[in-house]
Image (cartoon, rainbow, N blue to C red):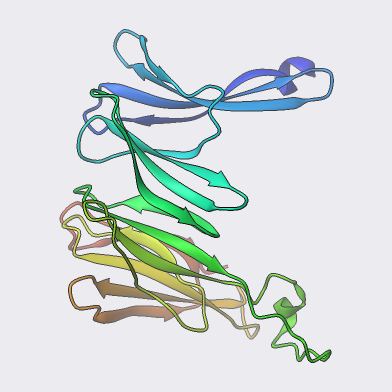
Length: 239
């Protein structure tokens, strides 16, 4: 069984926008304690030449930047928070595009590479009254009242603006091909029927913050825009 659990593995592969390079995430499990080491490499797809290695770099969430031969990645510090960096593979330029954000979640580049949508988690206020009223069965989980909201970062200026707020967590589904709209979803517990929650899907116009409710249905799934932005691809199940 050691040849299945130990050794080096390819965990993920992602092509560059021009299709010439490949970003690979590796992991290696070493005996006898099962210590795991993970790292990223960028290789030339045709020649398998190593273009850059991030081995021994304490980074995560490495993504291709849509415009040009560049990648972005995330660094984290327990005291200062998390940052997102831009690394140009041709000029070897490294610059910080988002600095020291506490409780930073995931992020996604716009199709034209001009902005980033990222999420930030917020912990619920501490209950100091000594008595807690449960809002439902999931409220028994200590993290249930924590929320996550979306922000937009303009890469050129470094200015961020908050996009969502409220009682429910908002999760990014997709960014439209022209970069003018986003899809985000919310989940509302509903134990009257399976899958025991309702999904609210909303489209937001990033120019004027107007919103259009797409649906509120008993389903949990993912949505993405078609290449021309006129249709939605939906992956999910009502059960």
